[in-house]
Image (cartoon, rainbow over all chains, first blue to last red; front, side, top):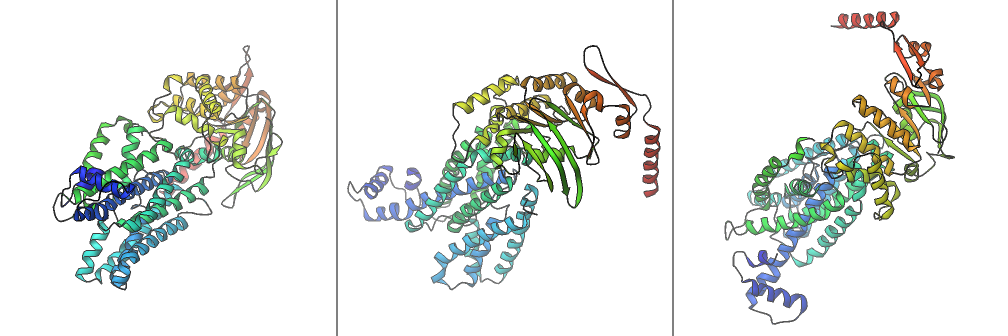
Length: 322
Length: 274
């Protein structure tokens, strides 16, 4: 993370970075060059911290959703959460009250959109109180398409300037990170991951199948409902501040599973860690590959991750039996 | 612990599946549930392991109505090994699968303690899957998987075992070994078995279900009469007890004339449909 803070449009020596961060965190040492201080403390540090939180949040959501709907393809995008957030964001960007609303408004709308999508999947995915995994994921896909259509329709009405903003938002970025938004995101991601890890044993039981889980004393429908709500809140929070970053939620959980196995009590914390590291890395590349321009994160997450993921898939013999 | 099923009625999608079913297994009994496909065997098990609430009637494990107990409490008494294909256990080791059996012994904050490790350890040894302990469950053969699932059930420390077609798809030796294993636990067992020979070999008592109702119940030889075998299963057969104590069923070369006619009728109907 220190390295990620030091590299960017302007490269700042690690020692300098350390000095500045230490100064702010502990109040000791001397404040360095004011411009550097500004870059390190007000721009890059919050950005790196946000990237880590967003990566962790998306990856943990993905891991939980894959188990909840019993499908390895599941992630916040497939279940419609990301598209719900997109619609919310796009609506505010194109119709919203301009500068006043654009900052907080887009985040709030994206969060509401994601949670609305989660609620819809939750409502439509059940029949007589039973939430069958296949019905859930198909409901998620359908809800996602509806939101995507609505988003596309709204985009057609947008001006070119708005479109650029929309595009950038949908591909995701942590460039706008500010200290004041971090506490909320940090609390949600850390508490969310901790809480979901507490559900680890029950998540493991879901892997055994619904009837077996029921026989083990787990109320599978209630468990699914709780997990779906928690992951929608978690996803909504991180998408709201960083936009629709794909692939992290799909790939990172599988990477960790292939490496250390599927026990959620280990899987979720490590997924959070790897998701955090991965997105910090991707963000670092997004602002260095094409200096001084920045690439949206969504472009790089898959471009960088997919080849490695495919290599791991080919190497792992355990998948042959499944 | 004893199991009592009393006047059970179950309806699924407005279709009656079980009608006035009663049965009893005393402590330590192995009761086999037999009957043709669709006779309601698995549905009855679901009511016992608390997955499908009966419309009427009571299931008691020990002295308590399982549907009046909290799910976790009921699951500490009753363990089930089912034909459950909805899961996806890729990435779980054999030990981790067996450890799932400890779930009903913990709340959300529960951590595995010495008792849990001991129960898992014992179950693994008991079912002879120690050499497989670190293997990925999905890499196992059918017979190995069933042993692991039985180990998971035993790790639950149950007082009633519910088994649905435990020996399906297994070779004959694996079947016998698994049955002996169940016998050796001494736990009260309710087992659905398709194979009547195996049912006769394993069980103290049999209950025959036909179209959702109990048509015969009692000791194996009294239940598997030529009459029941022909009325319920549509086969001509005799049963007797051999010198070694095992009940054997001898099937006649020809199925029932009635059934041949019925099968012909079905074939004809299908032809007409096309």
